[in-house]
Image 1: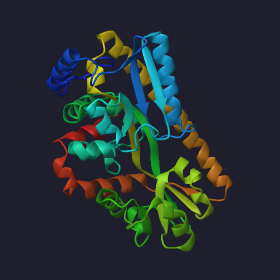
Image 2 (image 1 turned 30 degrees about the vertical axis):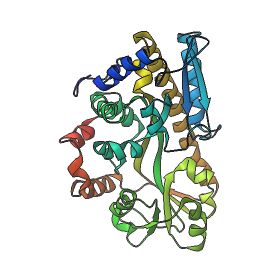
Image 3 (image 1 turned 90 degrees about the vertical axis):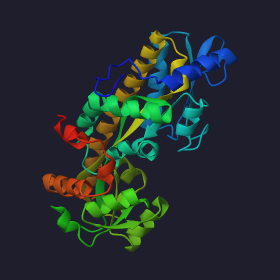
Length: 343
């Protein structure tokens, strides 16, 4: 698949290095290829997700879908709670051929594929629907080709991770980024996250996730940002009074397969694995969107004010900050405009 060619489900990119590696592995035996148990192709899945998370449950959908389309061909082994590989170690395990399948974040991809950092920036992706159109179309095909070539893994489908919102300890009239001036907004400690907090108009304040609840309670910080399911799970609603639905980052996880494992599959098997990954993503996306919609009512019931600012003002201000930064210099020419034009 060449850059610019539309992505076709079931037609997956395999670079020359992968194909040569697969041939060598075939001559040497099973090393680096999916192991076989009772004649079945072994597909080991590693995820840090806990059992109740949609990102964990979707793997059962993947397994069941594959069993229906290819009965008896695959031995799918699901390992939750980072029990097989620690979170963050999965991409390297895929590249080495020590793992077949996992989910990889845009942030992890950007470490090795700098061009992918465009998807870690604020207000690049408008909403979950646009996210799916971007990654299921020509843009996704081109970016996934870069991932396959540089990381020796191939993304199969795009899972909606959640939309990050602002959560403030005191009610404030927030219409534009200027209204966040002076707000100490907790952000993860990396420079990319701190830049996003500043672009939003706030004073970004690095703080470990485990310290956020106490920071909000004590006033060390004035607010934090996370998807709504995280706000509920961490009980931040107990120590805050307002949700500002800025929707400033539509995040994703990518179901990905080792190129070595992919090269070992017959063409028909690749198509069935692709279809199973798509089914898993659809299951996750539908349920996560439903959960987020229900949580707005939950937070209102808990007494939080839920407000929506001038999203156009936020979008323009934040994108301008990125376009004038060093980050934009490594983005492929014209990619931002193409993303913005995706409806």
